[in-house]
Image (cartoon, rainbow, N blue to C red):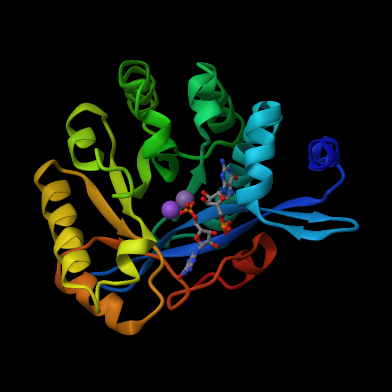
Length: 253
Ligand code: G
Ligand code: G
Ligand code: MN
Ligand code: NA
């Protein structure tokens, strides 16, 4: 109840902000986009982990206002990136969407309004949904994702591989890409099973025309093996840490 109260209005008080982690193409090493990650600096308690406060926002329903605020800010930032590098290949922005935002059927309208008002090209907006958000409600989720994709927005499945039903979902849920969970990436050099699973995910995703991102790349060797196995994109501390929006803009290549 305490955190729930403190979170109310935190965005408007400037306590919440977005950091961006760059995403790279494995083929040529080019930066192609960034994931937006929310941070909360509580005036007394300091930084509170997103795994804690996103949950609070979900349970309390505050995500219904916070989600659109995050989306709007991320789209505005992405428009600024394109303006800062005229002539360069555009960068996508990837925004995490929580299960409750997905269940609320308003998401396509929120997204459409955001794109209209910021003038961000739809294909530069990627929405990251967790497997668990679509499990159990595949009919509703599929219809919603189809609507979103019809508007040009890209849909990604986050934390992919952690749910046992992961692979079979790809047949029923229309997505543009999957993000291999960092628990697999962490062990690709040590554990032959994780390497086999990662390789299988890449092959199967590609056979369905789905792009693959590896998360949590912390070592050059992981990058090399993922590249060799044909993974498309990667992010992780070895490639770049999440940084505040202003810093990300200032450091753009
Ligand atoms: O840096 P990291 O600790 O930011 O993120 C932890 C978790 O919080 C991740 O699973 C991430 O998906 C989630 N998260 C971070 N930012 C957001 C956000 O803006 N919205 C939602 N729904 N989840 C987020
Ligand atoms: O679940 P989601 O993929 O949205 O969460 C992203 C989370 O992963 C964020 O908390 C982010 O800070 C974290 N992260 C990003 N790169 C790395 C990495 O290389 N190693 C680890 N351990 N975490 C990472
Ligand atoms: Mn994510
Ligand atoms: Na993840």
